[in-house]
Structure formats: structure tokens, C-alpha cells
Amino acid sequence: MMNDHILQAAISASRLAAPELLAAFRGRIEVDFKVDRHDPVTIHDRRAEAMIRDSIFRAIPDSTFMGEEGGTTGDGEVKWFVDPIDGTSNFASGIAFWCISVGAVVGGKVVAGAIYDPVADNLFTASSAGAWLNGKPLRSIDAPAEENATLICGYPVTRDFRLDGTELSLQRFGRMVQTVATLRRPGSAALSLAHVAAGWVDAAAGFGANPWDVTAGILIVERAGGRYLPFSMGKCSDNAPAYEHPGYLALRGGADYPTLKSIATEISRHRATSRPMATQD
Image (cartoon, rainbow, N blue to C red; front, side, top):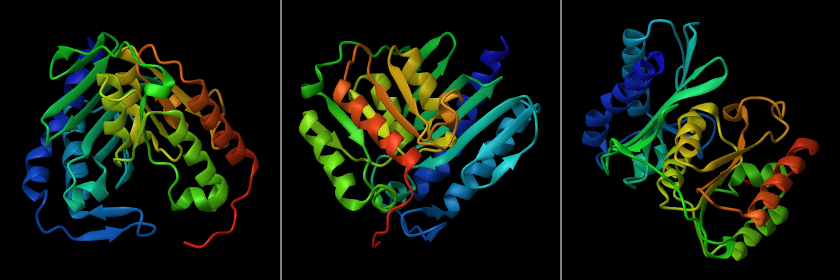
């Protein structure tokens, strides 16, 4: 019953900031940058995170809250990983591929997840009991062969050129393009995972994820019948929880994509054993 309560708290939190975000979307939005021009943030990210944080602590006081914008608050048993706007660049640019991601962990295991796409009004949720899209059971099955697959992958970005070298990064990208039927780069890890769970795409991969990007999506993919393969990239133990791994390959139910898995493994191993390579931004 506790997990049901946690899931309901996640659902409520994921919906809470949506009206304000929708009102701002495609309006005049001022953008700041946290690290560089590839890492944007808006006042709406910060406001939404504060609203979600307050909602969670009201519902479950025994919580630890870890958000992308405000860091860690509290030291309770239920750990929350929250991205108030996953896909900030899209949000600020008026591109309708962004979401609110709320994931809960107890004892190192993801127990509840909610990903809300306010523009499409799609709510993806999961608990130990299953996965749902707008309250209806969600199953990801009947994946096509690898050569007929649709892949979502943001690799490479500028960071990857710096860490792996421009030529090698582009070679890997070319292999991915040649392996699958279609490759898309829409720009939200959480919403990409939700689309894998729904069977709208067949695979999603990323190599610079944070826990707030993927925690909710991991559970939704797995409970929908898909697989989530984590890659440590040399940043954590191979035995660490999947949400701590910065690399991942998420697969729709029934998918067996050895070439994509091989490329992901290669990127992870290279990153674990190499120093950043000089490149121009």
C-alpha cells in the first residue's frame, strides 16, 4: 500500500506545475545557462521544481528530494529524483517534446515513476504492479528487427566530441544511422524512455544521463515489458543501481539489437579508460 501512496504522490507532483508551464510555453522565455550554452535553464524550471518539492514533502514527509535545479533537500527514506522540465531547450524554443519526470526510490530500488507530457496530455506511470498510459495498461511488445527499428539517440553532442574525439564520435553515429531504419534526436531522455515503453519507438540510448533524467523512465520501460540496459561509463560501479549509470540503452519489448548494444558497450568502455580529448567547441 505504501508504494501506491508513493505513486499517487508522484502523479500529483508531475501534474502540479503543468498549467504554469503550458501557459509559458511558446511565449517569451528568458534563458540562462548553467555550465555552457548547451545546458540551459529558465525561471520556469526553478519554479516548477519548487512546486514539485513542496508537494512531495506534504504528501510524504519522510523523503529525500534530488532535483536537477536545486540539489538535495531532506534525508528521508523515500528518495525522489525529479526533472521539472526534461527538455528545457525544446521548452524554451517552442518545440513540443519536453516533460516532467518524477521517480521514487526506496532501498535502492525504483518503486514509482511518473512522466507527464503536458502538451500531449499523456501521463506515463509505473509501480511494482505494472505500467500505464493515461490509466490504461501499457505493454511494449512485438519489436521489429534491428534493421527496421526506430532509435532515439542524442549522441554525439559537444561533450562527446571532447570526451571521445570528434572523428570517433561521428564514426559511431554513422554506424548507428546505418544499423537502424530511422534515427531521431528529439532532446528529452525521460520522454524518449516513455515512448519506448509505449512502443512508439523501438530503442533509446544516452551516454550522459543523470538520475533525474532516467529514474522514472527505467521503471516505466521495464514494467511495460521492455528492457533497460545501464552502462557505467567509468562513473560508477557496474553493480550500482541502474539510475546511477550515465549510459543506457532502452529497448522495446521483444527487441534484440546486438549492434546497438555493441556500440553502447564500446562507448562505455572507451569512456571508462580514456582521458578527454582536445577539441574545439
